Image 1 (cartoon, rainbow, N blue to C red):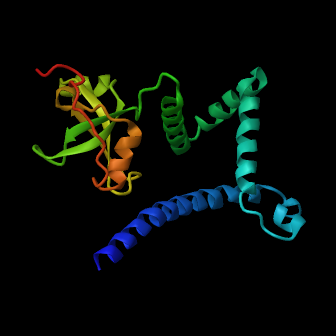
Image 2 (image 1 turned 180 degrees about the vertical axis):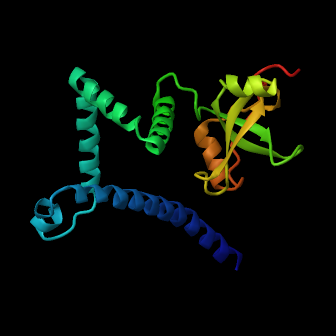
Length: 209
């Protein structure tokens, strides 16, 4: 019976990652295929061809992003974006959401951005228990003035769904930075610790007081 179990586990190791990858890609393709709804009904590929081709929405989404980027990168496009942002800034709730999301995207995709580039250890939910977190910002002057301590912003994701989590302000001396890539950190979180990449604890972000 042991050889049957070994073969079953070997089969699972092949098919489970493939199945999970296919499932995630299928969700992404299905979500991006919704961009086809932007086209007039008479010009949608399903109606023109008479059948559905998965993935055409991905091509359309990429084209929309590319064209938007080309327009926004020139002088005329920048003026349009500026006018659009001034309009949004006059709407009370919308301006808060828009500005926050824009700053987040600019920070994450900037070449010199530091958000979500470092994996750290923090004691959470209490002293003596450690959890993985991602450093989102080391600049927090307002909170520093209010608390009298030099704090950093960290995001503590939940397991196995890292899209949910906690935003925590942690004193710098309580942070332990790891020699671990963000990819390895996500693998460890998604596997609930079953995948444990080699990570050497590095120095604190700042010397302990």
